[in-house]
Image 1 (tube, rainbow, N blue to C red):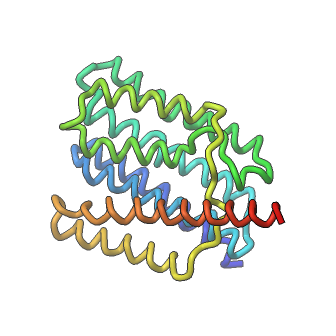
Image 2 (image 1 turned 60 degrees about the vertical axis):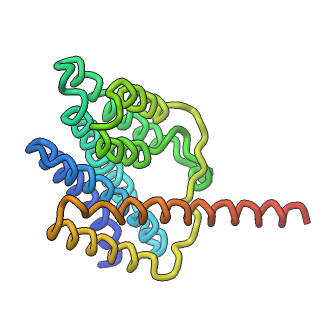
Amino acid sequence: MYRVAIPNLFTLGNLYSGFLSIGYASIGHYRSAAILVLIGMMLDSLDGRIARLLRVDSPLGKELDSLADVVTFGAAPALLMYYTSFSQYGVAGLYIAGLFPLFGAYRLARFNVTATATSLKYFTGVPITAAGGIVAFLTLFSRVIPNIVLILIFIIFAILMVSRIQIPSLKDIPIPKYSIIVTLFLIAIIFTLYKREINRMPEFLFIAIPLYILYMLSQFLRRRHFEKSSNKK
């Protein structure tokens, strides 16, 4: 019984990270807001895997995950981008920022009603988690990246979310041994460093997340290569 609640706790943690990100962005703590979206990415990468590992997949978890994603990777990055870059354009900037959660919500709804067994291998359109995480990451460099470039990237990712482009999924890769513990440890270290010295906290986070993604991608490619080799035999 308690196993069912475990993945949902990670999903709720993701949702709470998104809410806190919006709150921090509204009071001008943009770096903290961006980091909370990245922490939400780490939590989001675990909830589904834990549910499959414990064999407690449920419609409730699926719907809860979508609601959390709209907040953390739709509304939060959009508002963060507005506050850091688009606000100088007034109402027009607000309208542009609003496209992101709009397209992201549509993509999630489309996924929920069309998801099949092939969803384990491919996503249709860029996942909102990846798009929102990249947008949040870019806001950390809003002072050095021209606003027109940020607007173009922002709009491109919004459109890519509702596109029909097939993106390889990493869902079917087994969780590496100790990866959950390591991820939680990283989150704890990040929080500790943040409380001590806010200006230098994200440095190793920007190394840890790309390495984590590259590892998952390498495992996916290895598995694909093994499957192709087995089919040829």
